[in-house]
Image 1 (cartoon, rainbow, N blue to C red):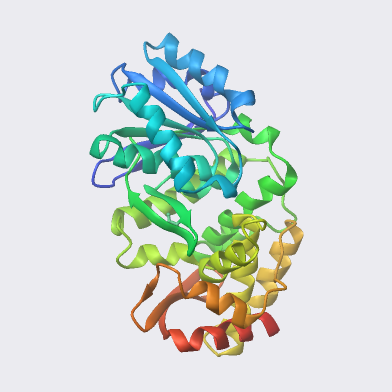
Image 2: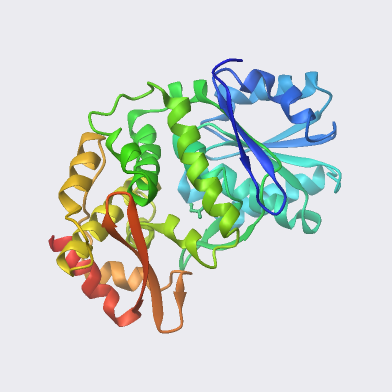
Length: 355
Ligand code: GLY
């Protein structure tokens, strides 16, 4: 297929991310090139399964996989130990063995939970990602982070497990609501802010869906580069958490009614304003970031106070003793990691909220 592109992720165990139109109906034969036919447990949610499960299952079966499927209620509120336990019990009831495989068909929540289940079932079986949202396509399906939320905060239990393959059918993005599509735009804009000024400015007067495959591949190439350098997030991979410290706090404070992408957008704007106000920027960034976020239907702030956000963030896994690592925008296309005392977090958030 001419509009298909492949990005190799040279993690500890390398794999390909294939992006293109119409790939879901051929996912079985594509996967059979890396995984010999086995039982394939497709994990999906109640929004995605009615749209795409049949297509995926038929393709997998045609390629010789024996398919079983488990569907959980859609939404971040499902990303918890109870849903994870339901997936694990399902894998056990279906007698999946270590030769078998899990497929995550859906967005970030599905990928995180299906990957986590695959990583701990029988001490680890293989899994593949079939992302159906823009957020999963540009970010969460690549790099092997899996997790569930705990009462204390977001993504606090999880493990690293690289998928054996990622197949992203860009046609699946056509059924996304503008709100869910813009969640993914936030993570793509993040990639531009971190590494790629040209990519960032492509979101000026966003042309949704035009060249979407190219946009996804470009984000995935940046992500692959970082994951190859630092698979287990001991250093530069922390950059990918730009905006995520305030974002996770916003999500938690809102009881997960604010979506991840929208929270990341607000978080990036908060960090850009804080960086400017506290003198960390080489060039002004806040106005440019706000402009791009607003023109893509994304928020640039929150009603939660600095003290509420700081209290929520201090349960964040990125805290290390009395310090926390935050990602500071220094100019569009360049950010830096900075360790700050946890006691300084509220002041940082206050600076970012006030602008
Ligand atoms: N979503 C950030 C990462 O994968 O590291």
